[in-house]
Image 1 (cartoon, rainbow, N blue to C red):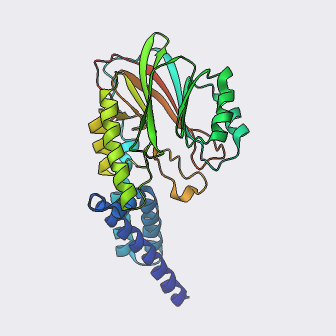
Image 2: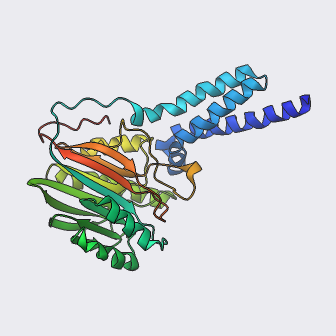
Image 3: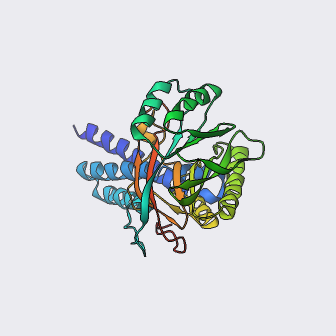
Length: 320
């Protein structure tokens, strides 16, 4: 019995050390692309360390258990981005609500009818679709009854209840990823929407490309007429300094800040859940609701956002 207890303690200690080491490597993320990858999994490290801490105390190793618990708190601190109280707006948002949806349909996803049924049920005012293959674009055009104004560029497909004006595509250096910028006249209020998909960061070259795309995207949003809304798969989580820098460079705030952590990828393997699909807003619009939609066959869950217009002279109120 004592041998089994010692073996269990060693196994739990190995798990705790591995999680602590991974968290430490993540803290060095700005120094190398592969180190940044470790920074994205803070919730997983916090969970493993907290569970290990409880187990170690129960197994008769209180000092190790308390150390693991302390490291769990350290790794959980970045989650305050999603759980810290939101500052109260200086003026109440006015006007009708606007419902937006961001969906990475996943190019291998064949559940077209499931997605179309979902969109008919949700009835969004504007939708941005990523990884839209020719087959997907053909299916998405069938949304014309509810989202009659549509445009496409590369893998991006956008659809809206209102006419799309000032529409242009912004490819990212010849990459299949890119951005689309369009303006909506939403019930008498003008909104600039930017839909974008940044490259994945696996490998030195891909990571450098993603980082350059973030710089381009920040400039693009800064130059867009206010108020602006960015709906994008940035292949980046809020747990890295690069995300905070992007918000500052683009002059945006996170719609999800203060509303709870709602991971949206990978839908097919929840233990590694991350939030890489983002709704970011500028002055002039206020998020009222942010939610993750149901499984629609993709490796991403839909990101649903409800917004209202507010005084464009006031800054975004979401904490950065």
